[in-house]
Structure formats: structure tokens, C-alpha cells
Length: 153
Image 1 (cartoon, rainbow, N blue to C red):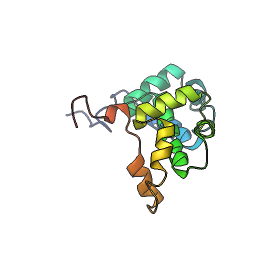
Image 2: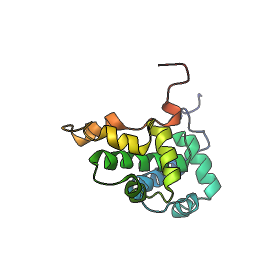
Image 3: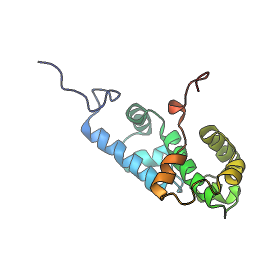
Image 4: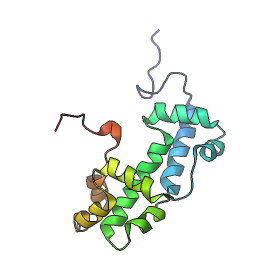
């Protein structure tokens, strides 16, 4: 008799549905509380897992670390705030839960391709008139694993 198919090809067979539910709760908490101080230990405690186990399972399930996922959520929100144009880059940095302007600017530039200040200047009217759901999709940052390889257009 053939083995039962996995839920997703990148989920290891020893990952239980209970673990997947816990990972989803962690991801949902990050989505809701991205602006709060969050760390892997606190997130793991919230779902009764060790920090190491959460880190490994999260990466296997979602293809990126807990920290990378959190930073992507923060950068997405920062992009929306910067497009609004009424907050400075520093204010946006703190509004989305980052405590270091340097780390925020570096990660923003990595994900978006331009610095936060340049994005603020150039993107102010970019999504004017678009429904918010379309604007989010059009301006969504590209995570490292989704970015085209060097030498491709």
C-alpha cells in the first residue's frame, strides 16, 4: 500500500497535524502582532514548543525563519505607511515594531530594492486610486527565495 500523500511536498513526514496547527498559530500571531516585541522564545512558549523545534519546523513549513517572516510583515506595513507620506522613515521604523533604524533600513532595502527614504519619495502616489487589496499585492516585497537569480531579468 503506498504511503499517504503529504500535506505539502516541503513538509517532512514526521510533522504532525498538531505541529502544523501550532505553526499556523505562530504565523497568525506574527501577522496580528508584528509591531509588538516578538522573539522566537516567546512565540514558542505560546504554543508549548521549544524555540529550537519551532525554528526548525517553521523553516521547513514556510521556507524561511521566524525572524525573516516577521521582518517581511513589518516591511510590508512600513511600505504602506511610507506611501501615505505623513510619517518620517524613523517614525515608520518604530511604528512597525523595529527598534533599530539601521536594521530596518538594511532589511527594507534588501526586500524592496530601494532605501525607505527613496521609496517614500517615489511611491507616494503610486497606488492612488487602487483598492487596498490590489495595492498590497502590487507593492508586496519579494522575499529572498522568490527573487530572480543573478543574471535573469
